[in-house]
Image (cartoon, rainbow, N blue to C red; front, side, top):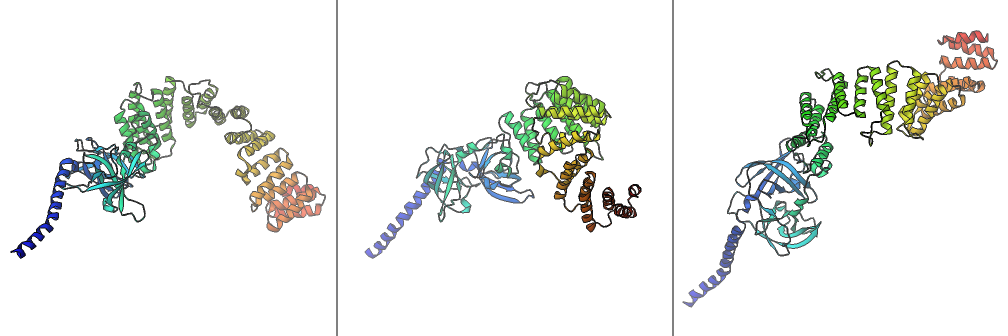
Length: 586
């Protein structure tokens, strides 16, 4: 009997610990289910897709409010063009807008499109999370009775005013991005890879970092956000939203149009929303939609909520019409003519006298080749004392107005001296010494002075142009052009210096070397002319103009036989002017 009982007791005592563990485990599971009942409903499966439609990543996210705002690892969304989430019932919801992202924290916040309230967890303040705190390692499931494992916080570190944890979770890929939830249904952290060498346990990032995930005025240039190709939300403030739209541009047409539509939905009484979208439509060739938005903007402009007034809308519309009319195209837009652009600019100026509106009118008249009207507008603009925009209507802007007036008068066939006087007014607006801002106007006046025969003044402008631009930014052509004018002005030494500079820039160009010989001849340096021409003929023996220059130099030195020989050679090679000099030296 004892032999029978003893083995039984041994077996009984051996089984007791396992029975207690199983009982404890079952009880722990019951407590867990009771304490975080329905928490699994806030956990969602996330699937992100590339442009081609193939799946990029799948992972886990968490609803953090009943409106469907969700948190997830940033790594799931990088390079994604769209994403969907699957809730605990298996329902599909679309990711609507990105609300903020940070690759360093590996967190992204986004809104979803569904329309119904969802089960959500609250983001913990983490102040009670200390070493040893038990938390639940969650994952997506559709099974309401599935037990989530309990893990522990092993170490707590401060990180940018938040916390960073080391947790008793295996440092393996399947755990990365899984949320940690407290027994009171608060979202504590997201598991992340532990980069420490040979460490088998993972880390976790405090989900309060989500508070820093926002869209700001400068988010359009944020690299983390730009790496996600899903439309972003607008900044919460209207002014910031306008800046964001401006900085966003049209690089990503889907994001740009989404932002523009969102702005209009949020601020329907602000005309600027419609003009911004109109400009977008124009840039994509949708001119009917563009015009409709401008017309709508004009109805919204009187509103106190509008940041654009009617005069500004008319002017912006004028510029769009002008831009389109200027473009060479086989398919002009009906009604989008320079005449229409001018009408819109005139309407703008009639509402609020503004130098920019005069400028636009002048441009339109110039494009219509109504140069006299353009001239009158530009003179009115340049002479105006209007200070409505004194901060930006600078001396440079006034200089441009005088320049446009000069150009218009020139095209209208006006007096050349009056055109030069207008250019004098242009250049007077620039400080001395001249900078690169003044350079184009100096060059233009130099050309006008050359045409008027005022060669020495023209050379002076070329000299100032050289100083403003800097010799390193010039080329052989510039020095050749200036040399030509200097030659006409009988400034022989300057001409010689310039043609030799041109040769230094382009030593293989024969025209510059021949021009050097001509300058020497014009300067009366006949011996040097002969030497230069003889060297040139070694390379270009059949160049008629070199033989002619050499013949003239010989003639001026009294060496008539050599002169006649070279001039006859020039004549044989086709130089029709050689005969005149032959008669002189016979």
